[in-house]
Each structure stands twice: as C-alpha cells, then as structure tokens.
Image (cartoon, rainbow, N blue to C red; front, side, top):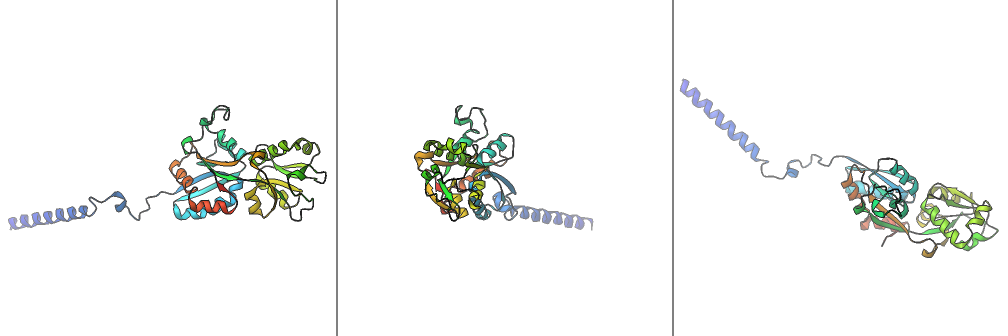
Length: 284
C-alpha cells in the first residue's frame, strides 16, 4: 500500500511540473511588447509648450490632432510674448519646448548662438534640436469702417492719424514695428506727439484695433486673419527683415523625447496645412 502511495505522489509531481513548464512556454520567446500588449505601456506625459501668442489658434487646432497621434501626451500651452516667455524660462519656469516669434529671444537662451547674440551666456536650448519652423508677415491693419482712411504705411505720417497701437519693445512684433517706423523716419514724431499706444503682446494690439480704440495697428498677418481685421498694407522684407519663428527642445525638459516628437509633428504636411491656412508659410 505504501509503495502505491509513493508511485501516485510521484505521478502528481510529474504532472504539476509539466503543467507549469507548458504555461511558461506560452510567453517564452515572444517580444516584451507582445506580452504587455493592451496594458498601456505609454505612461501619461504632460508636455509644457511655451509659444508666441500669435500661435494660439493654430496650436489649439494642432493639439486636437495630436491627441490621436499621441494619446498619452497632454499638451499644456503657455502663450505670451516671446520676451515674456524667455524671461520665464530664464527664471526657472517648467518648459519642454519653446516656440519663439523671433530669433532674438531664442538666441538669448542658446549658448550656440554666440556671445554677441547671447551676452549673458544662457544655456537652455538643446541646439541640435533647433529649427526654423515658420515664417510670418508684418501687416498694417485698421478697424471696421477705417474712419481715419489709412491705406498704407505711408499714411502713418499724415496729420489725420490720431493713434496707432504697437507691441512693446520686448515683443517681437513691437521690434519689427519700430524697425519699420524708424526706417520711414517717423517713429520719433509719432512718439513725441503721443500717437502711439502699446500692447504687451500681439493679441493686445489686435484687440485695440478690433475695438476701434486706435486708428490702426501693426500686427502679424496670421493675427489679422484670425481676428478678421482688414489688412491695408504688408511690410516688405527690406522694411523689417524676415519674420522667422524658431523652435527648440530645452535642456531643462523633463520629457525631451516627447518634446522632440511633438516638434517633428509640427513639421508634418498635416500641420503645415493648418499653419498655411491662417497665413504662415514653412520657413526655408
């Protein structure tokens, strides 16, 4: 009887070993992604993007598309003037990707830009990721009705002009505006006669014109499109240079791979169509 019990116990142990070996073999040899398929291997990521205010509408639309392309990534935007964004980054604000409305603010954060462009030696930009993403145009816009009869930049020297809104000095659109007016030789006279009001970013300038607070304003073509304002003139390249929007991943990014992936997405034909619809062109 004892021998029969021993044989039966040995049989049970053998069958148990075979069963466990077979179960282990079901996954052995398969790639890790197959074993975890459907288990949500992409951890949720919150990607912080600092972008010039003139990109508000386009990036809002692109964010909707990116939910499909990268559902695990939540885009968090901070829109403001490039100068303000640059200062926030310099002071330690959390940011993964920076999109500036001018080279100046990006250069001031990029050690590779050289001492002349970056006198403080700030080193926030991953220079190898930096690209010239977009080009915009600087335009002269008027409110509905155009009561002052402004038809072009030359009319800004006329006595009939009572007020014009520009961006502040630290705002790229303001810097472009001052360059235009300085080249025309009328900036000092407009300032001394108190005809200039200022906005802290391009959206504030757009609002002043839209509400008829001023006779006209200088903004970007894309903001004129988004707000439905009448464009009466466009600045030529020799008046203020090219309006290039650089973009780069920051060295302080907590999610550099995801930031790079979104930057690459911004350069796809799908996003290009969105940018071009409102007046941007892809930088060359």
